[in-house]
Image 1 (cartoon, rainbow, N blue to C red):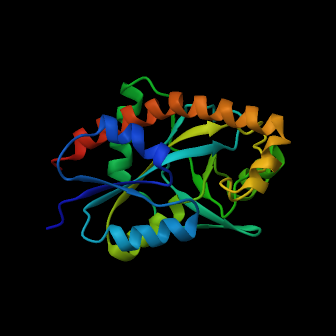
Image 2 (cartoon, rainbow, N blue to C red):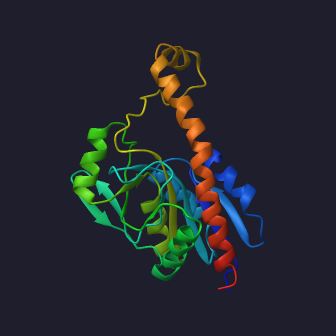
Length: 226
């Protein structure tokens, strides 16, 4: 019988608060990398034999009610390709209900409305509005749909638990792919607004990640022996 519960997130910074809060045997952590391709590959490679997958990390708000710090635990997950949003295997409904109930008990703003996965970051309010119009989702990420598809292939239940970082009205800075080389760093230095936005988001990440870590820890304590 499968024993492990696997907690997945795209970035090391997203996993760190979860590791600090969650310290129990039978739970492992996987950093997938950003985007559907990486997330799907890491899930397929690292999650065989799991009994539950928990897709975590940050997401973006697509509607005004999806405020920063809101925990998104969707009943449905979609992926947006071009002009069409397609549903992927849904999160486990019973476990999702447990997670949302615990979030409410913790006093967190929580939504069970749909989450949409996209291939590229939605960096403007206009792109976020389009995603909401086409999908009906209230939040957006870049990994959950890929994790859901692999979970379906593996026959493993999953729950998606994300926390909103950037809201529907915010514009994200457009940055070079590689910031470790001199030229991209010089390009970034010419964009003081982008630097300030990144700094503000980094500070906000610490705050909202605590909401996610508290909720995930309570959820795993609840389901560890199910």
